[in-house]
Image (cartoon, rainbow, N blue to C red; front, side):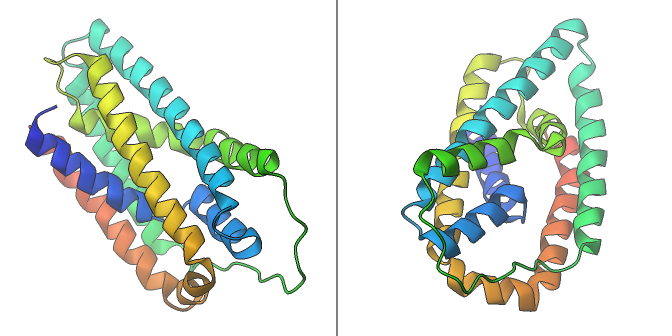
Length: 204
């Protein structure tokens, strides 16, 4: 992966990690209920799930590239359209509302929190579609796919872990803000998705 492509991917991964999703909501909830240190189990489970989804997406992308030399262009165009559609859906979605729990929560086991993070990541079929749409925008068919997979998975998961840990750390402060300004936040993220969907397929 060329340096400019890697930097673009890094910025995109950071933006996507900040976008509200099932795992970020779970991390926010666990951070508020169990504290940021124990929520690392949840974050780790989600990270394993993300690696599995990226691997499945890359396997499918690799198979298509072997079948047709024009497959990458088709994937980029279809992926771009899907990202635009996701952006519109996120723009129209309501603000996030997390129910507060005044009671002192029981001390959840780390294995249970890890499993919840893992299952939340892998049980969302939209995530697999998303990676299938997002990753081809940065693939160079002239370079080794396995190396690109390792770079993409490492960068994305590292960014995701950092962002989710910060969410857990600031859970009590972020929750009221998301409920108050969440609609505008969704519009910013939705606009970012749509912009990426329109621009990335045209990059080389």
